[in-house]
Image (cartoon, rainbow, N blue to C red; front, side, top):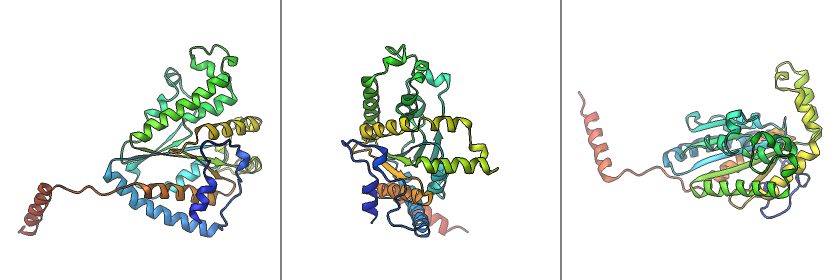
Length: 294
């Protein structure tokens, strides 16, 4: 069942994809109670594997989360990663780029936040914003002062095709140097987003998370869905596929993310380092000293 679920959620490389190809309410036949219990079991398994990942010190793990507003990125990160050792886990959220960031290439601000070996890094939004919000609002490109892009019309089909290639090249480089990349598009429906926006407005403990700009961006829903479909089509690769996770039921979304992460971690050939004979001899000497104290 788990293998079938992951297969359903994986955007097959080399194929054309649209967000409408994926069911936002899919739950793999699970009920909320069962999925919640499975999530907790997965977290306990990941705690053990994370310890081995850190000790093995050969791989880094990067989780990339992309989604429309109110899809549940923050909550998923909180619930799936709860219980893991915070010393080996880092979360970075990327919003509108600063002037300093705009004076560098668009990878710069994310590249400097990549996880080191033995650690798990989480990107809440990422360099993929450059083929999402920037594609929907190409006027943002003008702030980047790119050679050959003096006006919006200069960013045509080949410009975006090159950006997809650049992203694939970057991820290939990272993977070949020991970074495991897991990419999650949390796929929420337009109706469910509306319900969550209204909840935020009505709930005093949540309305601080709401912005009038969220509703304004909602007017570009179809453009965003096209941008997400293009992104998945062009950047879902064999080594780093996109997982399109149904986000209308948060309890299933969190379980599905944990299951995909756990299964990928299990595939790694992790082990605790074996000490050389010389170090083992020193351990035995230390044991003898401790046992013979006083």
